[in-house]
Amino acid sequence: MGKEITITVNDSSFQGVLNNTEIAKAIGDTLPIESDPSFWGNEIYFDIPVNIEENENPELELEIGDLAYWPDGNAFCIFYGPTPSSNDSEPRPASPVTVVGELTGDATALREFDRGNVETVKIEEAD
Image (cartoon, rainbow, N blue to C red; front, side, top):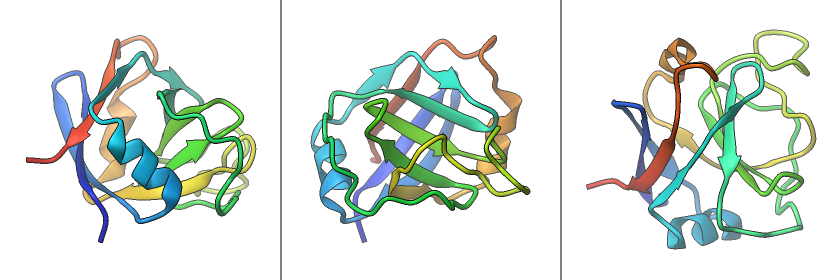
C-alpha cells in the first residue's frame, strides 16, 4: 500500500492513496501541493512540481476514482466520470497517463464542482 493522501477542493475533503510507482513516489515527496485547477469533462487536473517525461505505465482506459499523472501537461489528474474522449461512462484521458493512485471514497461527489466554483485544490499527506 502506498501513501495515504487527502485532496481538498474548496471546503470538501476526499481521501485517497498513492500507489508505489516511481511517479507516485515522486509526487508523494513533493506534498503538500496546492494549485489552480482546470476541468475537462469530469476530470480535474492541475500543475504539480514534478516533471517526468516518460510514462511509467501509459494507460488510456481508466476507472472513476483513478488519480493519474499526465506527462504531456505536467499535471495531476482526478477522474470522476466521463471526459470528452470517453465512449461510455468511464473516464478517458486526452493522451496516455500513468495511474498513480485512487480515491478511496465516492469520486462522483466531485461532480458538484466546476471551473466556476473552484479556486484551488490541495493534496497533502493524510493525518
